[in-house]
Image 1 (cartoon, rainbow, N blue to C red):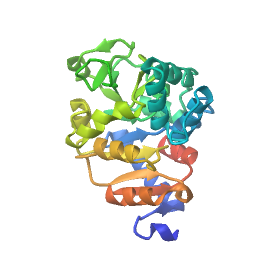
Image 2 (image 1 turned 90 degrees about the vertical axis):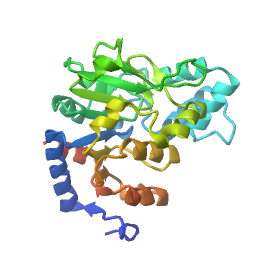
Image 3 (image 1 turned 180 degrees about the horizontal axis):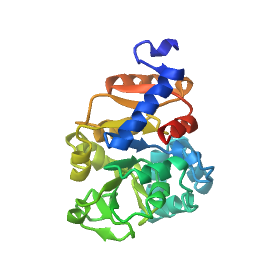
Length: 287
């Protein structure tokens, strides 16, 4: 066991794979919720950015950024929004994610399970594409409130991509929750610092989270796949989305890449790290 994990209950080797097999059974029964991060898109061999840092680098190829914003995707987007216009940020986001991401085998497997909820924290449309052959699901997306003149935190979309009501969403078998928005179906993006100001102000009292998300997480655990928690904003979302669910969760991790803040977060949140390569973890879960 690596020294930094003395108090973090890292599972490696056969123990980690055995835990993943058990989590696969919990997914099948609907007792576990997959929480998908950007690294899952990377398994498809896509050309779209698959980390916040890669998205920040994309912005830097399009707009001259000050030193303080380089490498930070949220600060980069805020600089572009302030110096140019919100429409420029949205256009660049749509350009960055213009190439559709082919659903991975895990995306397709999750779509086949008719899970109560799937959380997807990146901007690509792979999970929506995997669900496309079903008609009993829908998507709820976080939306920016910065300058849009709407007193709403999110919107609901049916399988066709048309916006639907909160009442219609209650009948969905599977809820796809995209807290930061997505390129599909309507190009909603939370990306700049301004987008997150009101959300982070109120997220502790859960206001920005849809009721349907809060109800479906109850008594369920989360499985974090392809996620990092090296930024305070990422940790805040993971903590608040998983709040009031069960007390033990799991995350597939690369131990050598984790920061001290990530280690602390995993411990505090009751997230057991599993040291298994992401591609192998996906194979086990889908077995």
